[in-house]
Image (cartoon, rainbow, N blue to C red; front, side, top):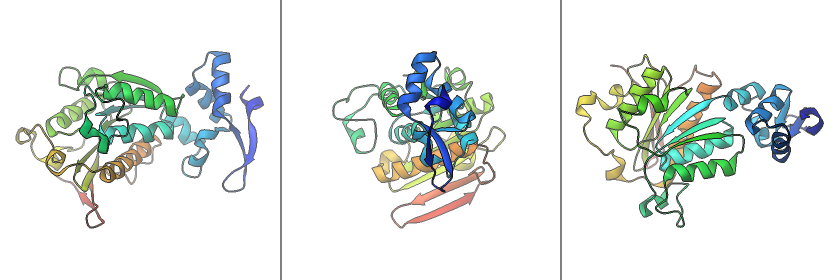
Length: 281
């Protein structure tokens, strides 16, 4: 059925490519009872590229795309960073996203949070993220957790994923996510915003982690991050989220040699500088 649905086109490098449209994958899903995710994986395994991923091909080949579709990623926090990360990962074709946030949209979120609109103020961020992902990519399966991550629920919520993405706005909660990722034995991609500056780091279970960034956890008692003092303009949010997603996708397709592991990537849009600091205990 996949082969019969494929269309032949000329790829970016001039090579012959077989592609299948989103409408055809959805139709095959309806006819066979298989999920759109499984239909897309079957297509890629047969060398047929879903049209939606055609512009990924020069960067990520069919085997990479299959890895994305088979992956499970947990997004903790669905505000500015989390909304942009969910948008990018859904478009990239990450097959399963857990959307974790107990908050609701408020008017001050409108400047940067992609899923916040004038019409859905007061709605839960998790439900808005679910609706947006469904509208973007029918192959992405979502699990909605409309609750704040805590020491009581973190281990259960994070277990079973391939990567955890920290999109939170306070340091104590970041340590809770880090502990859960360590317990699950999976990498954590953490980011933070402060005005026109932002940072990203990658932490594996055996690494020093957030204490190398923020100092001993016992001293990190403030409940709010620097963004509450310095603000979070939209351009910083989107740039840092894109960098965060780049690290997630590199982990999922096993391109780990250049990761920001044990490093801190820092961008300052006020003077157009980017630095990468080596972290050590």
